Amino acid sequence: MNFVKRAALSLWARKGRTLITFATFLVISLMVMAGVLINAATAWAERDARRSVGAEVGLDVDLGAMGGVGQAPVIDPATVERIGELPQVRKYTYSLWDRVILEKDAQLVDAGMEETMGPGGTAAIGLLDSSLLTDFRSGRFTLVSGRHLTAADRDKKRILIEERLARKNRLRTGDTVTLTGNDEKTTGKFTVAGVFRDPRPATEPEPEHYVSPANMIYGTVGGLAALSAPGGGAPGITRATFLLTDPDDQREFRDRAEATAGPALDGFTLDVNDKAVQQMTGPLKSISSTATFAMWLTGLAGAAVLALLVNLAVKQRRTEYGVLLSMGERKWKLITQQALEITAIAALAIVLATLFTPG
Image 1 (cartoon, one colour):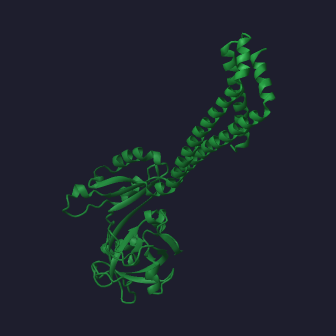
Image 2 (cartoon, rainbow, N blue to C red; image 1 turned 90 degrees about the vertical axis):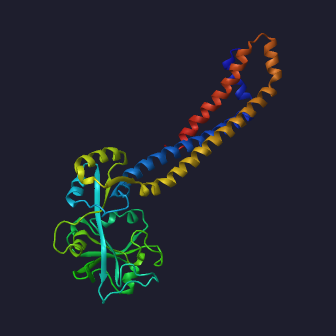
């Protein structure tokens, strides 16, 4: 009898064993395919997340080049804007900072800290676009009311204040606050554009400016520059952030930025800050790793179970194989018959698993 026909008859005659083997193959196939689909889905989601968040490239003062002495270099806003117009850039912002003093009608939050910037003094950071601040993009800061500062507000006197400072002075969006510049002479009335929440305790000094996080103020570049340089002129920029459309364009962006800015970048570095990307893609990578581990574990366990089933099947059919060999049947045909039976069951299980698994 042809060994192919004999394999079909054997599968039909041993329905119980065939169903057990088929069910085992089906479960293993479903779990392995589920792992493959999870890996594919997380890879797609990670790629989509990277593109939606983009890569953040920061332009900062090169402290190593300063050697710990001398005044920090500044860069002209026009140079930063030329870099921001490169095709790889989706959005950009730049900033400056200085000390400002709240007038007597407003008071700082008492955090029990030493007043490093004098009575009523705190740090104010001028931004072109506050929504691109890393802490806002990562979700660490939350805008409680109002709106972000944008490029359209550049030369207007508008600020964002922390909710504890707003609560202490009963300030809301639309109210005005009088600020005095570092020269303690130049003053300006600023409108509260928004109130944000910083989760850090008021008693924990802000590491860069060493003031209470509750007293940090973010304002428009032009508004704060008017306090820092009352005589007019372009403000000196010490930091900028460029949000790229595609994280894969980092190298090209750096090359073109250096060519665009030229010597103006002396004393500055262009570094990638992928903190926001990592926060979004980190859980996806964890899911992918877990799915891969489970897939391989399932595959190995399934292979061991199937090997055991095949071994038991061969032992149970010793008499049958012995009779066939005594009748002159070739050994390779018996081995091929056994392999054919397993292959047929596996093929059917894989096809059904493919149909059951959503694509």
